[in-house]
Length: 439
Image 1 (cartoon, rainbow, N blue to C red):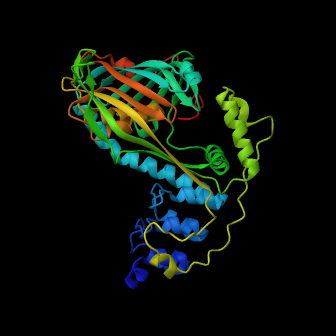
Image 2: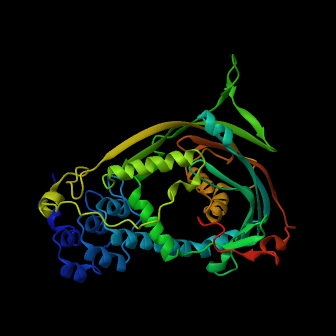
Image 3: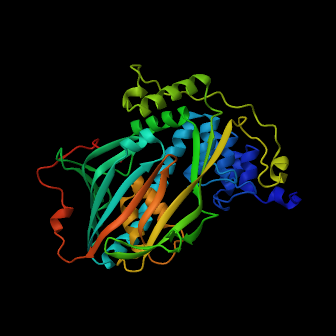
């Protein structure tokens, strides 16, 4: 049980619980706006869950963090989708994107300085996507990504543009990061077949924000993460009778192979905000996507914005009852949860080489630049794990519940003859700001 002192311990939370905006406004600069209570809820969590719209706007105006999870693993945005107020969801989406941009800008000077200190190089990564679902495995691609680095600039050439819901887009794409340019011009994607280029924008249009809100309000609230708590590494073995540690050459690099044990994908979803009609529509959309039909969203109907839901019943929980509840036993403050969770264990392997000239820290800096491509962000998450000694020259990891990928660093060389023209937009390319709508 909580002690009575807990009742006065979280003044911002208490103001929000009691709907006291005036006191909240006077205290908001004095106390930590990101503080979590015993349930892991920040003041913003509580304001969203209780439908305190004025408090939500006040907290956001003072920079309350949006990308933060409570003990149950849910963010304020997840709770806002459950509550169903469209304006609140829109405000949180905008602030989430603004805070992500600001964090990237804070890291940028260090990132550029680190790239400059690194030697210039050429590197090749080979991707092979595989699935245990027979029909899916037939359509999965492979790709060789070529990466050039010179000074504070990186260029990546790839034929795999993107993937969404088992649809894979092919092309001849170059991704250029130029650390010498101002942020609005530092990230560019070239479509070499169409001779088009697109600057990767830092800010979405109003239309894109509202489209995203529609999708969030119409879909399951999802939380999926690769649990690394129980991960252990063991040496992979080879041989039938006389077993020995597996060692092989990966390209020109000697490598020790390890099994990764205890890798679990934990998926949780909520759908208390969805009607039966929503569920039927979502099922139809997913079926059309799995058949490769990307036109399933519109169905010929004019698009109508999702309206706010009727709010859930007013909570009759008192502040004392809430704050005295044991951690992990948070009283229900919003809708009754419609909740499902699942976990799937994955087998993964990694080959670590002491010979590879790049360090893991250097690789993380390169991956931070090219993370807008979804498969690279998954690779970055993996490399952040505490790996055995060496460099991961070959990795076999899950990137989706049904898809694993094998990544091989098959070539690497420090070079001082990299052509500076590689990092320029060719003069005969035209700008198309919507060539890659997801970027």
